[in-house]
Structure formats: C-alpha cells, structure tokens
Picture (cartoon, rainbow, N blue to C red):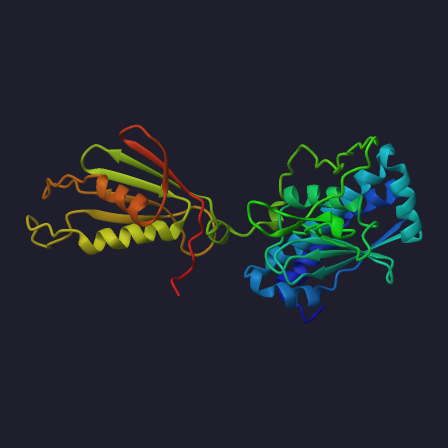
Length: 345
C-alpha cells in the first residue's frame, strides 16, 4: 500500500475501510439479506495503473470504485430480498457455495460490465477504462443484468451487449427481398391448422427512481464543470454594462480575450485605456484559477461609448455554438451539450 499515492491511501482509509462508510454498510446489508459471507478485496495498485490517466484528481478514484461496489451490493440484496426471485436466490446460493465473492477488473471499452466466473466462484465487476458512471446509471444496470448473469454461457454482460441474429434452420428459411434483391433469413411458417402464440420477452424493469451521487466521487468544480452541459446567462444592464455568467470557465476567457483584442482606445483619456473595461471574476468554488462571471463596462466620465450585447451574442451562438433556450430582451439564457476539447490538436 505504501506504493500508492497518498490521496489513494487516504481514500482507502476513509472511504473504503471505515466501518460507517456507505460501501461497508451495503456489504453488511447484503450479508444480512443473504445470510452468507461477502468478500470484496480490490487490487488497488492494478486499478490505479488502469485508471490513473482518467483520474487527475486521485482523491476521487477510491470513492468512484466504492460507489460501483455499493451499487452492485444494493442491486444484489434488492433482488435477493424479493420473494418473486426465490428460485434465482436459490441458484445464487448454490453457485456462490454460500460465500459471495466479488472481484473488480477493468474492461478495455468504455462501458461497465458484470459477469460470473465459474473457476473463481466469483462475481466480476468490470469497470470501464475511463470515468466510472454514477450510481444512478449503475444501479439499474446491475438490477437488469444480475437476474440473467448465471444463464449466459460466457457469463459476461455489458451495457453495450448485442444479441446475435437468429440462424436459419434450413434453406426453406431463406427468401429474397423483392425490394433489395438480397437474401434474407425468415422464420418458417407454422404448419397449417396449428396455433402459434408469441410470448413477449420479459426484461427486468429498472427501478423508477434516481440516486443522489456520493459527494466524495465527484471531481472538484474546476474539473467537473469542464464537462457538458454548459450553462450561460447574459444580462444587459442599460447601455453601458453587460454581465455574462457561465459554468464553463474557458468560454468566459475566450470572450474576454476576443473583446480585449478588438476594443477601441478611449482617446478622451490621456492614458489611452480601452473604451470597454473587460474583467473576469474568479469563482468562489474550486481550486486554481476558475472564472464564472465576466463584466463589460463602458461607463466613465471620460467615455460616453455605449456597449451593445449583439457582438457578445454573436460570439456565444455563432462562434461557440451555444443554443438559446430563453430570452426576454435584456436577459439571454444558453446551453451547450457538446463538449469542448481541451485544445484544438
């Protein structure tokens, strides 16, 4: 453990091993519901080597892994406690040999997965090679796939799993599509006089609720707000003042840099300042330099230049690609759901 970064060690101590940690409570609840021992032993050095690049803030890695295990335990205990799943619960105890073991690995793809390993008699939670999803995503996924985890021959299910196409039994099941001229597989018609009933495929229903994420799993604001959706609100205060509020700090920096570059000089003042005073205001949250407000002011005793909001609106919509969702003549609200890349190359 000494090889791990200090933030990882603190996370293991405070978020994973602490008795009153949410993940430990979920593990104990699963043990109480099933009546068998539950063992989870993450290989932290291996998880760190796989996920290191996706967690610049190492303080969020352990809480994110813990949230995945917590969601799995909650889903498993919910299913096992439901009388409608009594047969499945019997299979669970039989396959686990009355000892639920949970292993954690990392997939090459970007989706989370769940599988059953016969050799180890263990569940395998496969984390994506990227940022781990929130519990509001993982809980319905685990609930929807655990009921079928023992039925799969390969035992692995992921959130992007595709079902294979049905195979034709013989040449009678192949016909030619008249529209395209290509061969296609069709089901053989039922014998004459027989009655065919089609049973709809029943899928486990995901819980109709959401889960508030653990604060410890979230990145700090200067990293979290770099992900969409981005929100921007612009106010025009008369003819001399404009204020822009935005959740995406680089957006405000871009607008400020552009306006500073092209601002006219105030020749009525001997110091020749720009006609518009453009100022970025630092956010009260996060670490480092993060801006959440931009002010544009032209009012002074040496300057009677008015400032129009149209140039800022053109930058917001025409250049940055924000979409307008509300306006009333003096206030404009925008939203952008497409992520900005950190750089252009």
